[in-house]
Image 1 (cartoon, rainbow, N blue to C red):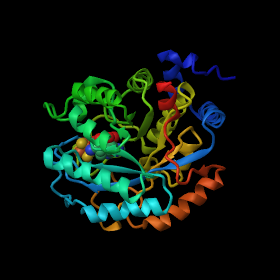
Image 2: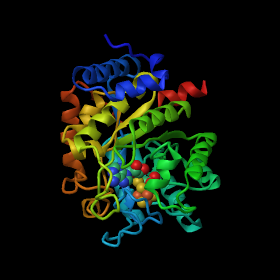
Image 3: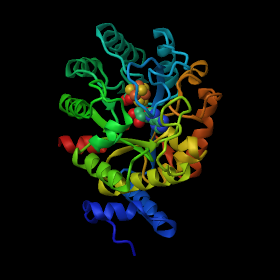
Image 4: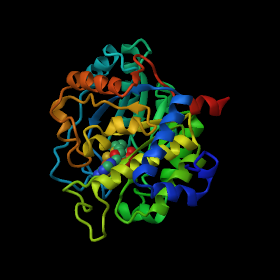
Length: 357
Ligand code: SAH
Ligand code: SF4
Protein backbone atom coordinates (compact mmCIF):
# COMPACT_ATOMS: atom_id res chain seq x y z
CA UNK A 1 0.00 0.00 0.00
CA UNK A 2 1.38 3.41 -0.98
CA UNK A 3 1.03 6.04 1.68
CA UNK A 4 0.78 8.85 -0.83
CA UNK A 5 -1.64 11.75 -0.76
CA UNK A 6 -1.66 15.53 -1.16
CA UNK A 7 -0.99 15.64 2.56
CA UNK A 8 1.91 13.20 2.85
CA UNK A 9 3.56 14.82 -0.19
CA UNK A 10 3.89 18.06 1.77
CA UNK A 11 7.08 16.55 3.11
CA UNK A 12 10.10 16.95 0.87
CA UNK A 13 11.38 13.60 2.04
CA UNK A 14 8.22 11.92 0.76
CA UNK A 15 8.58 13.64 -2.62
CA UNK A 16 12.17 12.41 -2.89
CA UNK A 17 11.03 8.89 -2.00
CA UNK A 18 8.46 9.00 -4.80
CA UNK A 19 10.98 10.36 -7.30
CA UNK A 20 13.13 7.31 -6.59
CA UNK A 21 10.31 4.83 -7.27
CA UNK A 22 10.88 2.12 -9.84
CA UNK A 23 8.90 -0.86 -11.11
CA UNK A 24 5.55 -1.49 -9.41
CA UNK A 25 5.81 1.49 -7.10
CA UNK A 26 6.51 3.80 -10.04
CA UNK A 27 3.42 2.47 -11.83
CA UNK A 28 1.27 2.71 -8.69
CA UNK A 29 2.24 6.38 -8.34
CA UNK A 30 1.25 7.13 -11.93
CA UNK A 31 -2.01 5.21 -11.50
CA UNK A 32 -2.90 7.23 -8.43
CA UNK A 33 -2.25 10.47 -10.32
CA UNK A 34 -4.36 9.26 -13.23
CA UNK A 35 -7.26 8.36 -10.91
CA UNK A 36 -6.92 11.75 -9.22
CA UNK A 37 -7.15 13.46 -12.60
CA UNK A 38 -10.24 11.49 -13.65
CA UNK A 39 -11.98 12.21 -10.36
CA UNK A 40 -11.32 15.96 -10.46
CA UNK A 41 -10.93 17.36 -13.97
CA UNK A 42 -11.89 14.26 -15.99
CA UNK A 43 -10.51 12.70 -19.15
CA UNK A 44 -10.70 15.70 -21.50
CA UNK A 45 -7.51 16.78 -23.26
CA UNK A 46 -7.30 20.39 -24.40
CA UNK A 47 -5.32 21.40 -27.47
CA UNK A 48 -3.23 24.53 -27.85
CA UNK A 49 -2.01 24.94 -31.43
CA UNK A 50 1.67 25.79 -31.07
CA UNK A 51 2.96 28.56 -33.34
CA UNK A 52 6.76 28.78 -33.15
CA UNK A 53 6.74 32.06 -34.97
CA UNK A 54 10.43 32.99 -34.69
CA UNK A 55 13.71 31.44 -33.56
CA UNK A 56 15.45 34.79 -33.19
CA UNK A 57 16.61 35.00 -29.58
CA UNK A 58 18.72 37.49 -27.67
CA UNK A 59 19.55 35.00 -24.92
CA UNK A 60 22.16 32.33 -24.76
CA UNK A 61 20.85 29.62 -22.41
CA UNK A 62 23.42 26.80 -22.37
CA UNK A 63 20.86 24.04 -22.95
CA UNK A 64 18.92 25.46 -25.90
CA UNK A 65 19.46 24.79 -29.60
CA UNK A 66 18.31 28.24 -30.73
CA UNK A 67 20.50 30.18 -28.30
CA UNK A 68 21.98 33.29 -29.83
CA UNK A 69 25.49 31.77 -29.77
CA UNK A 70 24.47 28.98 -32.15
CA UNK A 71 25.56 30.37 -35.50
CA UNK A 72 24.62 27.16 -37.32
CA UNK A 73 20.90 27.78 -37.08
CA UNK A 74 19.11 29.68 -39.84
CA UNK A 75 17.11 32.46 -38.20
CA UNK A 76 13.52 33.01 -39.34
CA UNK A 77 10.44 34.94 -38.51
CA UNK A 78 6.97 34.13 -39.83
CA UNK A 79 5.21 37.01 -41.54
CA UNK A 80 2.01 38.33 -40.00
CA UNK A 81 0.11 36.73 -42.84
CA UNK A 82 1.67 33.31 -42.14
CA UNK A 83 0.96 33.54 -38.44
CA UNK A 84 -2.67 34.48 -39.02
CA UNK A 85 -3.01 31.62 -41.49
CA UNK A 86 -1.81 29.19 -38.86
CA UNK A 87 -4.14 30.70 -36.28
CA UNK A 88 -6.96 30.32 -38.76
CA UNK A 89 -6.02 26.68 -39.28
CA UNK A 90 -6.24 26.16 -35.51
CA UNK A 91 -9.59 27.94 -35.39
CA UNK A 92 -11.02 25.97 -38.32
CA UNK A 93 -9.87 22.70 -36.75
CA UNK A 94 -11.51 23.64 -33.43
CA UNK A 95 -8.35 23.65 -31.35
CA UNK A 96 -9.85 26.22 -29.00
CA UNK A 97 -6.52 27.91 -28.27
CA UNK A 98 -3.14 28.79 -29.72
CA UNK A 99 0.25 29.35 -28.13
CA UNK A 100 2.56 32.01 -29.54
CA UNK A 101 6.10 30.93 -28.74
CA UNK A 102 9.46 32.26 -29.82
CA UNK A 103 12.95 33.24 -28.83
CA UNK A 104 13.16 36.10 -26.37
CA UNK A 105 13.12 39.61 -27.79
CA UNK A 106 12.23 43.01 -26.41
CA UNK A 107 11.63 46.55 -27.62
CA UNK A 108 8.72 48.73 -28.61
CA UNK A 109 8.50 47.53 -32.21
CA UNK A 110 8.42 43.91 -31.11
CA UNK A 111 5.92 44.59 -28.31
CA UNK A 112 3.55 46.28 -30.72
CA UNK A 113 3.97 43.53 -33.29
CA UNK A 114 2.83 40.96 -30.75
CA UNK A 115 0.03 43.24 -29.59
CA UNK A 116 -1.20 43.51 -33.12
CA UNK A 117 -1.06 39.73 -33.61
CA UNK A 118 -3.04 39.09 -30.45
CA UNK A 119 -5.77 41.48 -31.59
CA UNK A 120 -5.89 40.05 -35.09
CA UNK A 121 -6.05 36.45 -33.85
CA UNK A 122 -8.97 37.46 -31.65
CA UNK A 123 -10.68 39.16 -34.60
CA UNK A 124 -10.25 36.33 -37.07
CA UNK A 125 -11.71 33.86 -34.58
CA UNK A 126 -14.66 35.94 -33.48
CA UNK A 127 -12.96 36.21 -30.08
CA UNK A 128 -13.17 32.43 -29.75
CA UNK A 129 -9.51 31.34 -29.81
CA UNK A 130 -7.79 31.45 -26.44
CA UNK A 131 -4.23 32.82 -26.56
CA UNK A 132 -1.30 31.62 -24.48
CA UNK A 133 2.03 33.42 -24.75
CA UNK A 134 5.47 31.95 -24.22
CA UNK A 135 7.72 34.87 -25.04
CA UNK A 136 10.12 34.99 -22.13
CA UNK A 137 10.92 37.84 -19.78
CA UNK A 138 9.32 41.21 -20.37
CA UNK A 139 8.55 44.27 -18.26
CA UNK A 140 5.27 44.35 -16.31
CA UNK A 141 4.05 47.07 -18.71
CA UNK A 142 4.58 44.82 -21.72
CA UNK A 143 2.86 41.88 -20.02
CA UNK A 144 -0.01 44.22 -19.17
CA UNK A 145 -0.37 45.47 -22.75
CA UNK A 146 -0.50 41.97 -24.15
CA UNK A 147 -3.01 40.94 -21.48
CA UNK A 148 -5.22 43.93 -22.26
CA UNK A 149 -5.13 42.98 -25.93
CA UNK A 150 -6.52 39.53 -25.19
CA UNK A 151 -3.77 37.08 -24.18
CA UNK A 152 -4.86 35.31 -21.03
CA UNK A 153 -2.28 32.63 -20.27
CA UNK A 154 1.51 32.84 -20.05
CA UNK A 155 4.12 30.11 -19.84
CA UNK A 156 7.47 31.01 -18.35
CA UNK A 157 9.45 28.08 -17.04
CA UNK A 158 11.65 28.73 -14.07
CA UNK A 159 13.84 25.92 -15.53
CA UNK A 160 15.13 25.16 -12.03
CA UNK A 161 14.13 26.59 -8.67
CA UNK A 162 17.71 26.34 -7.40
CA UNK A 163 19.46 29.70 -8.03
CA UNK A 164 22.87 28.02 -7.97
CA UNK A 165 21.90 25.50 -10.60
CA UNK A 166 20.23 28.30 -12.58
CA UNK A 167 23.54 30.09 -12.73
CA UNK A 168 25.26 26.94 -13.99
CA UNK A 169 22.89 26.46 -16.90
CA UNK A 170 22.89 30.09 -18.04
CA UNK A 171 25.63 32.59 -18.80
CA UNK A 172 26.50 34.60 -15.72
CA UNK A 173 25.20 38.03 -16.65
CA UNK A 174 22.27 40.33 -15.98
CA UNK A 175 20.34 39.06 -18.96
CA UNK A 176 20.14 35.61 -17.40
CA UNK A 177 19.01 36.38 -13.88
CA UNK A 178 17.12 34.02 -11.58
CA UNK A 179 15.70 36.94 -9.59
CA UNK A 180 14.35 38.57 -12.70
CA UNK A 181 12.66 35.34 -13.72
CA UNK A 182 10.92 35.14 -10.35
CA UNK A 183 9.86 38.78 -10.60
CA UNK A 184 8.39 38.11 -14.03
CA UNK A 185 6.35 35.19 -12.68
CA UNK A 186 5.02 37.42 -9.90
CA UNK A 187 4.05 40.18 -12.28
CA UNK A 188 2.27 37.76 -14.63
CA UNK A 189 0.21 36.51 -11.73
CA UNK A 190 -0.55 40.01 -10.44
CA UNK A 191 -1.70 41.18 -13.87
CA UNK A 192 -4.17 38.30 -13.97
CA UNK A 193 -2.72 35.80 -16.40
CA UNK A 194 -3.25 32.12 -15.85
CA UNK A 195 0.38 31.61 -15.00
CA UNK A 196 2.38 28.57 -15.95
CA UNK A 197 5.88 27.52 -15.11
CA UNK A 198 7.97 24.39 -15.20
CA UNK A 199 11.40 22.87 -15.25
CA UNK A 200 13.54 20.48 -17.24
CA UNK A 201 14.23 17.11 -15.68
CA UNK A 202 17.67 15.58 -16.07
CA UNK A 203 19.73 18.75 -16.47
CA UNK A 204 23.45 18.49 -15.88
CA UNK A 205 24.32 19.03 -12.18
CA UNK A 206 20.66 18.58 -11.12
CA UNK A 207 19.89 16.34 -8.13
CA UNK A 208 16.76 14.61 -6.87
CA UNK A 209 16.73 17.13 -4.04
CA UNK A 210 16.59 19.93 -6.66
CA UNK A 211 13.61 18.29 -8.34
CA UNK A 212 11.80 17.89 -5.02
CA UNK A 213 12.45 21.60 -4.40
CA UNK A 214 11.07 22.35 -7.86
CA UNK A 215 7.82 20.62 -6.97
CA UNK A 216 7.59 22.57 -3.74
CA UNK A 217 8.37 25.79 -5.59
CA UNK A 218 5.60 25.21 -8.14
CA UNK A 219 3.00 24.25 -5.58
CA UNK A 220 3.92 27.02 -3.15
CA UNK A 221 3.96 29.61 -5.91
CA UNK A 222 0.44 28.37 -6.57
CA UNK A 223 0.81 28.21 -10.36
CA UNK A 224 -2.18 27.52 -12.56
CA UNK A 225 -0.35 25.56 -15.21
CA UNK A 226 2.74 23.40 -15.37
CA UNK A 227 4.82 22.66 -18.46
CA UNK A 228 7.74 20.31 -17.80
CA UNK A 229 9.83 18.05 -19.90
CA UNK A 230 13.01 16.04 -19.95
CA UNK A 231 16.20 17.87 -20.88
CA UNK A 232 17.49 16.65 -24.24
CA UNK A 233 20.92 17.59 -25.51
CA UNK A 234 21.41 19.64 -28.66
CA UNK A 235 24.66 19.16 -30.57
CA UNK A 236 25.37 22.87 -30.97
CA UNK A 237 25.21 23.74 -27.27
CA UNK A 238 27.79 23.62 -24.48
CA UNK A 239 25.71 20.88 -22.82
CA UNK A 240 26.03 18.40 -25.67
CA UNK A 241 28.76 16.61 -23.81
CA UNK A 242 29.39 17.48 -20.20
CA UNK A 243 31.94 16.09 -17.82
CA UNK A 244 29.25 15.34 -15.21
CA UNK A 245 27.48 11.97 -15.31
CA UNK A 246 24.08 12.29 -16.96
CA UNK A 247 20.89 10.26 -16.59
CA UNK A 248 19.87 8.27 -19.65
CA UNK A 249 17.05 9.72 -21.76
CA UNK A 250 14.78 6.95 -20.50
CA UNK A 251 15.57 7.87 -16.90
CA UNK A 252 14.80 11.53 -17.61
CA UNK A 253 11.55 10.46 -19.23
CA UNK A 254 10.55 8.37 -16.20
CA UNK A 255 11.52 11.16 -13.83
CA UNK A 256 9.30 13.58 -15.72
CA UNK A 257 6.38 11.14 -15.47
CA UNK A 258 6.87 10.94 -11.71
CA UNK A 259 7.13 14.73 -11.44
CA UNK A 260 3.83 15.10 -13.32
CA UNK A 261 2.17 12.47 -11.16
CA UNK A 262 3.29 13.99 -7.87
CA UNK A 263 2.08 17.45 -8.87
CA UNK A 264 -1.27 16.10 -10.05
CA UNK A 265 -1.78 14.39 -6.69
CA UNK A 266 -0.77 17.54 -4.80
CA UNK A 267 -2.75 20.03 -6.92
CA UNK A 268 -5.52 18.08 -8.67
CA UNK A 269 -7.14 21.03 -10.49
CA UNK A 270 -4.04 22.34 -12.28
CA UNK A 271 -3.45 22.26 -16.08
CA UNK A 272 -0.39 20.23 -17.06
CA UNK A 273 1.20 19.84 -20.45
CA UNK A 274 2.17 16.52 -21.97
CA UNK A 275 5.25 18.02 -23.59
CA UNK A 276 6.68 17.44 -27.04
CA UNK A 277 10.03 16.59 -25.44
CA UNK A 278 8.33 13.48 -23.98
CA UNK A 279 7.37 12.47 -27.51
CA UNK A 280 10.96 13.05 -28.65
CA UNK A 281 12.10 10.26 -26.33
CA UNK A 282 9.14 7.92 -26.76
CA UNK A 283 6.69 8.05 -29.71
CA UNK A 284 3.88 7.49 -27.18
CA UNK A 285 5.44 9.89 -24.69
CA UNK A 286 2.62 12.39 -24.63
CA UNK A 287 0.00 9.68 -24.19
CA UNK A 288 2.03 8.22 -21.31
CA UNK A 289 2.12 11.71 -19.78
CA UNK A 290 -1.70 11.91 -20.04
CA UNK A 291 -1.89 8.62 -18.14
CA UNK A 292 0.36 10.12 -15.44
CA UNK A 293 -1.84 13.17 -14.91
CA UNK A 294 -1.21 15.65 -17.76
CA UNK A 295 -4.27 17.12 -19.55
CA UNK A 296 -2.94 19.54 -22.19
CA UNK A 297 -1.30 18.89 -25.56
CA UNK A 298 0.30 21.53 -27.75
CA UNK A 299 0.17 20.11 -31.30
CA UNK A 300 2.73 21.81 -33.50
CA UNK A 301 1.06 24.01 -36.10
CA UNK A 302 4.24 25.76 -37.27
CA UNK A 303 4.53 25.54 -41.09
CA UNK A 304 6.81 22.64 -42.10
CA UNK A 305 9.44 24.75 -43.80
CA UNK A 306 10.32 26.44 -40.52
CA UNK A 307 10.22 23.50 -38.11
CA UNK A 308 13.71 22.32 -38.92
CA UNK A 309 15.01 25.63 -37.56
CA UNK A 310 13.11 25.58 -34.28
CA UNK A 311 15.05 22.76 -32.74
CA UNK A 312 15.48 23.45 -29.06
CA UNK A 313 16.85 19.90 -28.76
CA UNK A 314 17.75 16.93 -30.98
CA UNK A 315 15.11 14.60 -32.45
CA UNK A 316 12.33 17.12 -32.02
CA UNK A 317 9.38 15.29 -33.58
CA UNK A 318 7.09 16.38 -36.37
CA UNK A 319 9.63 18.16 -38.59
CA UNK A 320 8.27 16.39 -41.65
CA UNK A 321 4.62 15.87 -40.70
CA UNK A 322 2.08 18.43 -41.69
CA UNK A 323 -0.40 19.72 -39.15
CA UNK A 324 -3.36 17.88 -40.71
CA UNK A 325 -1.74 14.43 -40.48
CA UNK A 326 -0.49 15.10 -36.99
CA UNK A 327 -3.98 16.02 -35.87
CA UNK A 328 -5.65 12.84 -37.16
CA UNK A 329 -3.05 10.52 -35.68
CA UNK A 330 -2.98 12.40 -32.41
CA UNK A 331 -6.76 12.36 -32.01
CA UNK A 332 -6.83 8.60 -32.62
CA UNK A 333 -4.08 7.98 -30.11
CA UNK A 334 -5.87 10.06 -27.51
CA UNK A 335 -9.09 8.13 -28.03
CA UNK A 336 -7.24 4.83 -27.85
CA UNK A 337 -6.27 5.62 -24.27
CA UNK A 338 -9.88 6.55 -23.37
CA UNK A 339 -9.47 10.30 -23.43
CA UNK A 340 -11.47 12.81 -25.45
CA UNK A 341 -10.43 16.07 -27.05
CA UNK A 342 -12.12 19.22 -25.77
CA UNK A 343 -12.79 20.63 -29.24
CA UNK A 344 -13.40 24.36 -29.44
CA UNK A 345 -12.88 24.83 -25.73
CA UNK A 346 -10.38 27.04 -23.96
CA UNK A 347 -9.88 24.47 -21.24
CA UNK A 348 -8.86 27.10 -18.73
CA UNK A 349 -7.10 26.01 -15.59
CA UNK A 350 -9.67 25.02 -12.96
CA UNK A 351 -7.04 25.92 -10.42
CA UNK A 352 -7.05 29.50 -11.67
CA UNK A 353 -10.83 29.69 -11.34
CA UNK A 354 -10.75 28.17 -7.86
CA UNK A 355 -7.90 30.46 -6.84
CA UNK A 356 -9.94 33.54 -7.75
CA UNK A 357 -13.08 32.42 -5.91
N1 SAH B 1 12.22 31.78 -25.25
C1 SAH B 1 11.11 31.39 -24.46
C2 SAH B 1 10.24 30.30 -25.09
C3 SAH B 1 10.93 29.28 -25.94
S1 SAH B 1 11.95 28.13 -25.11
C4 SAH B 1 11.59 30.97 -23.08
O1 SAH B 1 12.76 30.62 -22.94
O2 SAH B 1 10.77 31.00 -22.17
C5 SAH B 1 10.73 27.12 -24.31
C6 SAH B 1 11.28 26.09 -23.36
O3 SAH B 1 12.02 25.11 -24.07
C7 SAH B 1 12.26 26.60 -22.33
O4 SAH B 1 11.59 27.17 -21.24
C8 SAH B 1 13.04 25.33 -21.96
O5 SAH B 1 12.55 24.77 -20.76
C9 SAH B 1 12.76 24.38 -23.12
N2 SAH B 1 14.01 23.88 -23.70
C10 SAH B 1 15.02 24.62 -24.21
N3 SAH B 1 16.06 23.82 -24.54
C11 SAH B 1 15.71 22.55 -24.22
C12 SAH B 1 16.37 21.30 -24.29
N4 SAH B 1 17.59 21.19 -24.77
N5 SAH B 1 15.71 20.20 -23.86
C13 SAH B 1 14.45 20.30 -23.40
N6 SAH B 1 13.78 21.46 -23.28
C14 SAH B 1 14.40 22.59 -23.69
FE1 SF4 C 1 16.17 31.76 -26.08
FE2 SF4 C 1 14.20 30.53 -24.69
FE3 SF4 C 1 16.17 29.12 -25.90
FE4 SF4 C 1 16.76 30.58 -23.74
S1 SF4 C 1 15.36 28.80 -23.82
S2 SF4 C 1 17.94 30.50 -25.64
S3 SF4 C 1 15.40 32.32 -24.04
S4 SF4 C 1 14.60 30.36 -26.88
